[in-house]
View 1: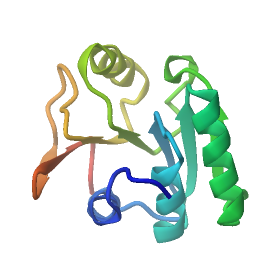
View 2 (view 1 turned 60 degrees about the horizontal axis):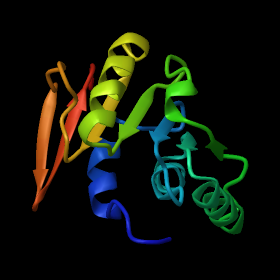
View 3 (view 1 turned 45 degrees about the vertical axis):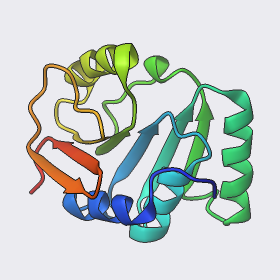
View 4 (view 1 turned 90 degrees about the horizontal axis):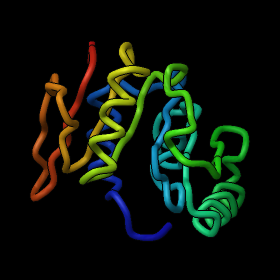
Length: 146
């Protein structure tokens, strides 16, 4: 797996949202699939990665197959704005700028009853339920964390 969100930060995120085998996590902009792969390995959950870049999607699929996670992790090549977020129990976000503004609006509409984890950049017009600082990084949590 390439550099990305450190596993230690993901472990804190997964524990905070009580991610478990009954959850379905989606990572919006998954790059090489690190977040959904680690989510499945660490918690047993089913995980989906959405990636717009075809080369990154193929790389993520190959890594997923190599890790023998292809029954627990699905990598989809699509624009995250084309995907309905309502079926997911946990949404992971690492986006910034104008994209984050648009995505925040989509999350407010489609993920009302979903736990959301945002790394480093808070969602627009949403108040986090909890904030956890890990070194120079910050995790923002939204939704019912019980």
